[in-house]
Image (cartoon, rainbow over all chains, first blue to last red; front, side):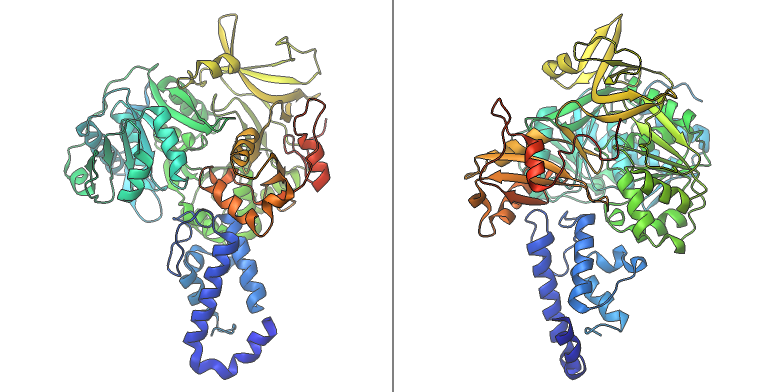
Length: 103
Length: 530
């Protein structure tokens, strides 16, 4: 799964916004199914902390999922609120790294 | 130290001690001087009085952690009312149950109109103050929003007596019915004074508020800080989820005193990239709520060598009653003692019959102290179980099994009932099991605590029959529980077993259930061994 994604990066650069959208949707679906607490509606720009959807264990699960899904390592110093308060922030952070299939 | 006797004078005291223009409080976004902090609290008090709040009324504070949540606590107390801290992240049904039990007449909040309607439904609440947001009218409620609050004159403290109630601190009872500890101004101010003296805190100190308002550790930053004019950093719920954000904030704000459950400190040390941040301003690390695994504490102390560490022991019913200080990291796996009686507390150990145990024998710890609550709110039945009077003294039965080590220090062995701690939060096992048994299709249930080496303690539910969680129904079940229980009481996973082991009397045998799935029963702590 991870290797497939990587192999595709070069050829799909022109459709990257579609790819971001797909990854964003996938991440929202993962959080909804495996992490979210309570039934607050979850969208890419929903604040995960103030809505109570994700607690500190949830953040760990999200980071682990992203690492294995994209085959990247996330430095503990990068796991800060600015990068992880919403799914949109996560996508922006991952894109900004320049070393993921999302860049 | 000033000899004030009630909590409603604290912010005026701070101005006398530290000066009105000195920084008092920040949440990383807003920064207030003591003068501004007092005036904001005073305007919130004025709003509450306008909404009809009378002396002794209960008023809920339902806000995310911020300078506004702290000012609201002081605003309620300043209005002569009894402050009821609420968990802003709790399900509305849980908050509603607390407001109903407290018989609250008003609530200070920042929630949406829908959420306000949900938490106040079928309660005695008639007034709503939203100090930092404007609010739309809500049927049946008098709402006072930020624009009105900003225009009010700050109220002076409404006179109260030291033995009047100051705040109710709620936990979930064993039947799931909320149970409120009723603290007086005397118990609150006595605790604040002892805490400030014990840790030698003055106006040059900066305290980090980690705990939420409904968790009793926050009394330290709420009340001890203004007594001596020490400033406070209120760490938001958001930053707390991110150890690296937390470490950066503690370093940037030059925090000198930290107080939290072990889990939060351990996460910051382990995952906070702390080598990138200078934490050398920390001179005290206080922890409490549950035991700190010695290896994890040693790692934290090596990472932050500037700080002395204090193990703070005391159920919220008595604020604090024992203390054990460490100047060097523990060198072996022996449990960290809870130490000796704190100034102003008397401690003794009793057996099942209430008689004092023989020297060296473990027993239940009883506490007598001026920092003790008056009793549980409207629950004489619980008072009768938990408070014993002897020789003219009131003693609180902690329910903790304690032994005296040969050097005289006390050691926590476990609980004598089925209360467990999950990341510092009290959970009554029966309440979670009762919530499971309320769900259609579940015939029997046991709840256990899993304590992995990572420190990510969590609950595990075991239900029968196994078919009750087939086809992904375990996720539905967890969601169902999340709608009624506080989040720390919601099991992280569910296991199905067709037959739960039972004791001779027919009760579900949690220990055997735990053996069947490889999880402890969570009452003791794995590193605690006599």
